[in-house]
Image (cartoon, rainbow, N blue to C red; front, side, top):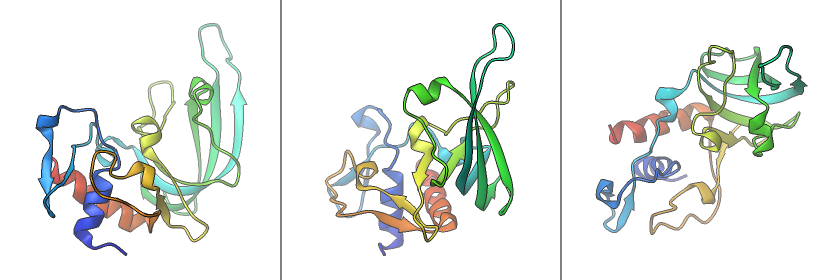
Length: 179
């Protein structure tokens, strides 16, 4: 398990924004640099939870001018914000996201950082795919190497796994460093 400072570095580098190089903040050890995130997962989220997809259903538009939506039902395995552990949560996403590849499958386990529902009752992960993480069969969030250190010299040999609560605390700590 990486040390606390390494975890902050790794999580802080998950969602690298496309900011100019002048915004780079050095970290120890020397030579490792990350860019601040363009958006804060924790501050912009209305719902934060890890859960299991139970059902996925396409809902056709009901009236002229309305949009098709996907209704996704989750069992909340660990509620962290806006949800309770054990509840069934039903969200609605614009069906167009599904055409772009943002899909869920029944049985899939994920940790989600979702925007608060819009006036139309729709939501989506904060920052698109940035607000969605796979969860293993033991309930640990999987941080894949492709999501870490894209603009760093740090080599991450494999997936990093941590419990949802630990992941959220570590992510908040990394985000606070950049504020």
